[in-house]
Image (cartoon, rainbow, N blue to C red; front, side, top):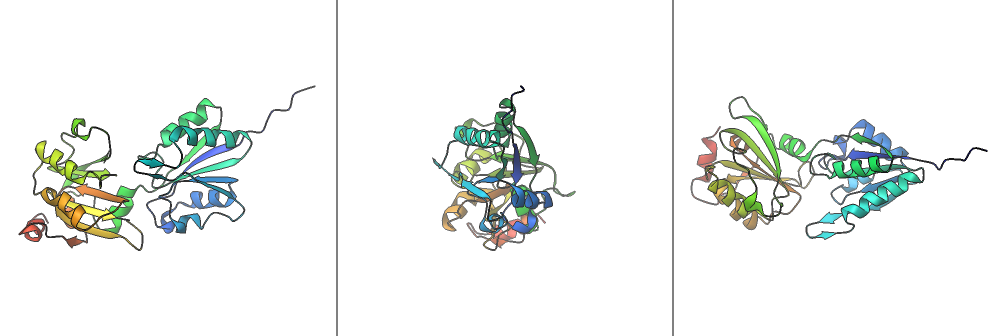
Length: 262
């Protein structure tokens, strides 16, 4: 007599986009309606969570700086364990799963356990927030290269960011608000002009979005003075002067200097 194999479900790594539920993909919306379980991050807003069918089980694994509801290893174990019971599991992640979302680690865990896994991309924060602010990450006159970096890395001063910001380049810094002053100091020490335009986009694509502009030398003062809170992006480069934003006058002549870049 043949043995009955235990049920095996599937894991879906789904990007929730930058905040506005209208920016979800159609596939993401369909999966939220049909999943057995949704495991979601804290950055996923109420508007997106409202699209989950009422009968679908939810588990929050919200992370905050220096405090995690659940460590990543335990999240991996949870996803695998639930899928192995036969459930269709959606791992709902802010932005895109593969842009600072640890989606690669979760994909590896699923593969190692023999669980089928599919990735549904989302609009990452850099693209969504910049678009809302009218800030082109590339522009024929200003930038032909874009780099994404994480600003909360350990040993920030040891990171090699040479060539990521400056002439013809745009640098987008995720998770950099807490270390904004150190980031500005590091870039300037690496040879980036202290007068390079910077845009800070707080809670981008949501109704509470705020976009601020300044110069690199004044970035730390801006974040402190305006009490900028995460989630927020820092965009460094000539294109930042094109953002539809407030010019925060951290030093005399900031607005005039920003205007000179357009």
